[in-house]
Image (cartoon, rainbow over all chains, first blue to last red; front, side, top):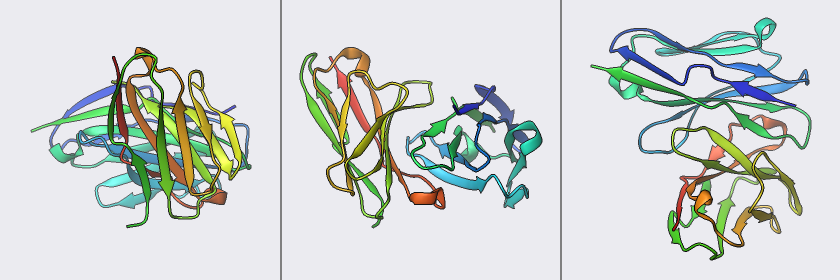
Length: 115
Length: 113
């Protein structure tokens, strides 16, 4: 079985604050892939990052950074110096590497960045 | 443009009516998925397919059927719509080996009255 938990349902910050969105996953497989997606108010799903289970290097892309820790089964997402345009729902997702598996999403975290 | 296309974008059904949602992808992806998203909630998997001619149940399959007769198309059917099926439906596809992102369609907003 596989499961993704995003314990924070809603976070509110003031512009320029840093914010971390948590993602904890469960899987029996040693090969798996983790994703983050952004869903702005317009409703579409925007891909942010993919990480496979063999690559534990953290990644930084502009104001975004991701911390992947297999030891704690977490794949957390940090936005530095948040902006109003970052307001959205963010989803973490997991797929196990063997054939025939589901792409499973967490419940999402709604981030509100206030000016 | 390459990607995932869902039709229709909006639909209103009466209780008991049937309809089919079409998802088409032109990336030669093996895996395709149908999700529903209810207000304030995450995406829940309805059905998925790992290849042409194959389908499997997800978390919330009841009341839906699917078919994957052609690799590029994944159809989601509602045989007898119910108000509980009012939702936004998303289709997604990924390549074999998951070495690509999951590409999503733009969503279909379905209202059952």
